[in-house]
Image 1 (spheres, rainbow, N blue to C red):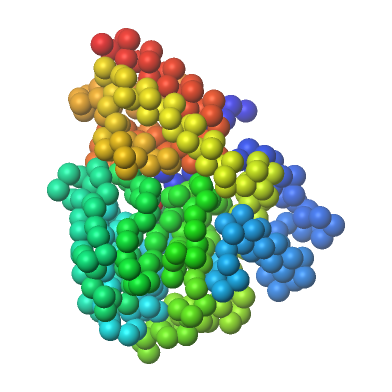
Image 2 (tube, rainbow, N blue to C red; image 1 turned 135 degrees about the vertical axis):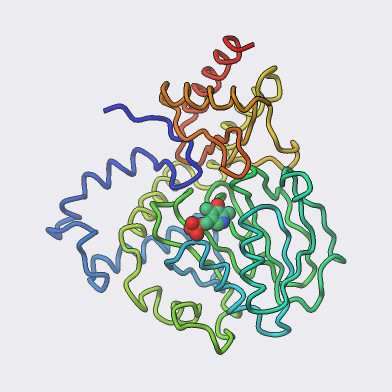
Length: 360
Ligand SMILES: *Cc1c(COP(=O)(O)O)cnc(C)c1O
């Protein structure tokens, strides 16, 4: 067996230790005589799995008691509708900062339900920076302000939160959840699809302050009402059982490593190896302004489409896969989520050095 270094933006690598545990438990979980895949979600064994996953998420992310944790389906994309349906309920207004495709999709979807306003955008420079805003830029009557914390496609990240005054803040954290500590108390809602840093695709994590539950618009489908899921401990219908189980294993792995402070330290070290190389390379160049660089997604280019394609092909042959940039931007992108080992980034940089020498 030869495992590759997988730089995919998502679904992406999972810690090998987690995959091994899952393999060991594939045919029989504990002494149940069955796989977690086959288990009733109402069984006491599964109840223990989902409860432990929630407890570990609360512990790892330091989630205050006045927040509900929900394990839902539909991906982050469903949250683009669920957030406005549930939160755009007082003045039917929400403000958006457009930092890329995902932020834009959230904005467009919200516009179907109320008055969505784009406050700032970095579209003018292919989303290569985070636009600066002040509290005065936002509508004081807005029901919430929405941001995308880490922009998976463009490789930018909010290193400091925008000042939104007293307006509730909502963030899509799909591609940075569990990568470093986050002050949950600053947000009304945080949401993330699991397939970047938490688990295989299937589960979507929503962390919502309890007082934002219970005021959904009348038209809200039952399944898209946060109240439905909060009232039923994410068991209104069948949850994505297996994905939640793997999320639980990933959380145990993070706890063993030393939690999110330690995770951050590792991620900063990993990203620095790659950014330092890019900053000194004569061939490769990062595309994001240094102060807004993501720790998770690192886009870069050579300046020649031909050389980019050659690099991606040769890298693939050498065991570094999924380095092609998003179809909307081209170039390359290395996604270096939690599960990417430091050696993966070190070896990639070695490979890039060699490619640079050969193609100078
Ligand atoms: C991947 C991603 C999404 C889309 O997630 P789905 O689970 O496919 O709906 C949304 N936002 C961000 C920031 C992402 O990285």
